[in-house]
Length: 94
Image (cartoon, rainbow, N blue to C red; front, side):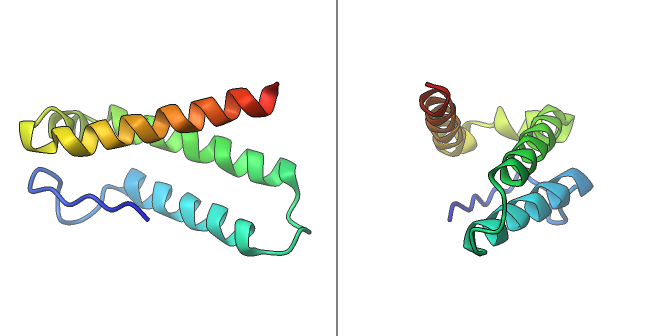
């Protein structure tokens, strides 16, 4: 599990951040559920998460926090994780 704390981020999460957390929890619960959870449903949930993350990253408060020098390492870790996910998606297409 990856958690980032920053003085630049507000103490109370933005509604979009709460939505992302909810979608992550939904993905985790479907992962732990039996095989009855269909692959299509998981992919739909993953797409919803991707769209919500995109909206969260585009928020001005998030953009401002990401540009702070003390968040550089966290931003690099997030980018590395995103690239790994893209690589996995490309591999799964092939």
